[in-house]
Structures are given as C-alpha cells and as structure tokens.
Length: 308
Image (cartoon, rainbow, N blue to C red):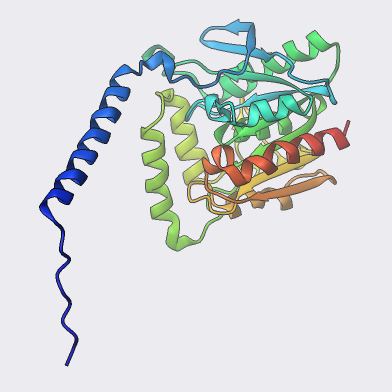
C-alpha cells in the first residue's frame, strides 16, 4: 500500500507573514519602476563624435580608451535590420568598449531611421553609396589607402559585397553572425527559419521597401550572394574577389543565422588567410552573453593586430 502523504501544515499567521512580505516586495518594485525614467535606462554610452553626415546616415568616431595597438582603423557596419547599439548595449557587455580597451581605433555607421521618403533606396545605395563614402572619408582622414571592416549580421552582407567590389580599399574583413548561403541550413528547417527571420524583421526599425525586396527576393529566396550572381549597380558581386584576410565569427546556437549559412563563405572567397571563430550562445548572445564577451573582443583584436 502506498504511503499516504500528510498535508503540509502552514499556520495562518505564517501564511499572513509570507503574503505581507511578498506584497511589500511587489510594492517596492513598483515604486522603483515608477521612479525610473526612460533617460535613466541608457544604452550605447561609449563616448563618440559625429564626423560625417549625409541624408539620414551619420558616421561616428569613438574616442580612444587605451593606447592604440591596431594602427588601421576599423569601421563597424550594422544592418538596416536593427541598430548598431547592440554592440554597445551596456558598459560591461559591450563589444565596442572591449575593442577600444584593447587599442582598436573604431568608427561606426548609423543608418538612421528610414521613413516612407526613403522607400526607393536600394542595397546599391547603401553599399555602393553611403558605405563607400564612409570608407573613403575614413581613409582620407588617416591618409591611408585601406581600412578594416567589421560587419554585423545584415551589415556583414553589406561589407562582404563592398569588399568583393572594392577589394583594393579593404585591409581586413571581419564578419559576425553573417548569412552568406541563405539556404545553408537543412531543408526541413527552412520554413521555421523564414518565420523567425520574418518575426525578427518585424521587430526592428522600418526597412526601406526596395532594399527589403532585394534582401528577401534576391538574397533569401534566390540565394544569389553565395552563387556569385548578386549584383550591385550592375556589377556582379564575386566572392572570389575577396582576397584580403577574413575572420568569420558565428554563434554555435544561432537559430536566426545558423552556423552553416555563415561557414559557406570559406569555400567561396579568394583569400588565402581565412579564419573562423565559433562562439557559445545565440544570435544576440554573442554580443551580450557573459561567455562570449570574454572571447569576442579579444579574438577580433588579436586577429587584427597579427595582420597589421
């Protein structure tokens, strides 16, 4: 016969004390939340200066936090899907601060907030227009011919295309969580991945209509980038033209950009100096996770320093 369990005996006064304690904690939390103002919850606080602007696009130069160890400046390029602030979310979880503390000279491009007035802008405009102008400006400021690019997600696609079209202006190319082969994951997961990407896009700032159509039709649906048939301003993006050193960083547990979609680049580039850095965590966790933070910044900075 199974042993009968005795009901837990909780005295009324104990229950009242516990209920009162819980109510007090909730009240304190509510009061604290009410006192917090939006301006007190700040992100992307690393000091920087606006150095160039065109239309809604601005280029910022981060102020140094340590003695420079990497001579060639690095331009961080995020995509239109999201904001660059993910790389500088808070002081103790910031790729930007980690790189600056390791002596990297950093710039970042901010695409601004596209509106209906920007609906006709294409990826051609962003890659061969704004991004090309940013690279040109930085090179002129430092009196050099080449700079380094650090692309993040869709921004990695931008920098990949730019590097293939203008290899003579790129010293090194660092890509993080960047899709190259949009069909690189297994067929069974394509519908789920598409729905995740759709949800991800819907939760971000407005994406110019023409650029979005290119992203979804030419890249995601027709997979033109990895097949070397994607074009920018009538010029074919041939990944074999990427001959500069390449560091490809991806997240092991990324369900938005699975590792296989990024790793496909290794067989396509013309570079003889291609490296991969696999990090723990998911798509966003690479930038804000404790484990990956200890590896991402130092991994990139050391790789850059070795190629100066």
